[in-house]
Length: 117
Image (cartoon, rainbow, N blue to C red; front, side, top):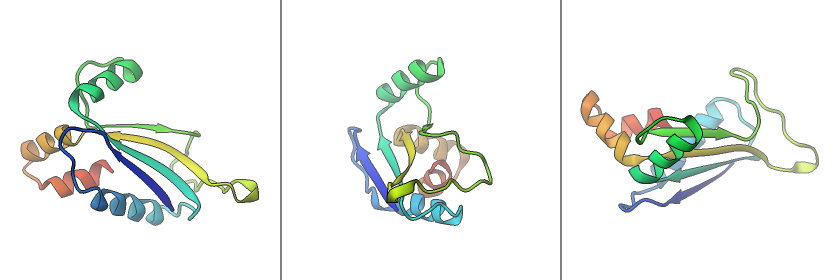
């Protein structure tokens, strides 16, 4: 499993737990080992721009997911012929919003981030 994580926000965070959470989630769903996923951590302003551009909503949000193919819940995607990696898509996460939600909900940041991932 290949998970690419880019931290493009002002306050860098330890990305290892996020990658580990994504790996566990994908494995528990039976996603093939040759799958690829990109996770991008962004600040509030960038997330607000994406939210407006792609969802036509104002303000930042916690997460936006952009699958490459139409995935069907409960159906494991098949691998591509010739051993090509299966690209699942991109996930944009705004840790600042996730942190605010964790405080509002009275849960740990790690628990809220795990839910988001």
